[in-house]
Image (tube, rainbow, N blue to C red; front, side):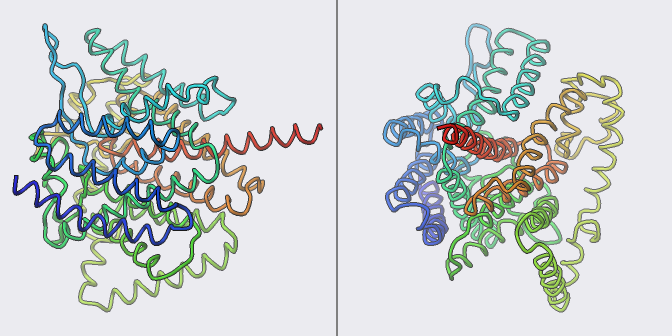
Length: 501
């Protein structure tokens, strides 16, 4: 118990520092009572994970608190869900079956939140969700989900296996998309969603300081506290060029970098007064991006900056400033004792991690051979293909570090096309609306930030498979884009009605 209390103290001290900084930056967006409830909720969840000593007791505590929050906050609970989403690691555990059924349901922390917050909100506000409106993103999303369900039904080994897989699709995909995209029903809630993500990652970035400096994976201790398997997390290859690669609550450094790049994008999409707290928060988020030493998210964030500047006002002058400042910072780094490490870590230039690049190239070549065997529908057992067996790593796994390749091998070209349409359609529509200047001045940067973030996500997921929190956050971003599109459509319809009067 002493170790569990020690973990909680570390999380609370450092986590509340990050929360305090974010609170100081966003006082104009979030009132004191809402910040207080966020802080209280985070403390409840983290304390339960640290002190419960039993997974099912932890689940009951979180479940009960979330149900209470739904009754108290009503539709505003959707913002609490977004804030609490990265509060803990996945913390997966199986609910054992009976009567010959090995497994009833695999719980994890995001699914607990989905069942305790999103499901009650779905039933309470179903009139806002149905009937489906004429938003193309909804239709493409449903096509993808229906296809995944059909594949599940045709490939299932038993009725219980099929039902369980469909439940996973419901909790991991359907509930987050439809509840978030419908209950974010005004511009102020879009801004609150931005603040919730940034604040939650500021907490992780603050705790990351102790993890990075002390070489201690603090959040991973919660698995031991609850006596559950570490899941996808492993300390394997978590040292790069002599430096620890931070993971925070996530299964691997690249996931942490991916989430940090999204938080930085949302941070830059919100216009607030630049003061010392703003600079500290920016520094915290940058450390969260840099300390995982994952170059995929770095490239993704660079793409974000380019796209963000491209659609924002003063494009040419800002691109020139980016080049000048970036080149200047690079020259300064070259003059420091760390110049060799800096060069080695530069994507496509440095030697550090060159083995990863050759592994990815080999994976792509081998993966294409696997796809040729079942082009249209893929193969659920693609990992067993002989063409991939030489890629088995020291952990006994084949790391499919490319989401697009994973989709094509598992669900075929049809699944990959539907997956790309799910991203491409909202991206295309948002760009069109930005160019048509359909957003008001206070909304424009929100829209540009979401477009730039989704573009960055499309780059980053080419370097990582659909593990851990990867799908949760790209669904969240697409849901926010869908919410903005719906708000514009409602405004247009209202304008037409007003003009006819």
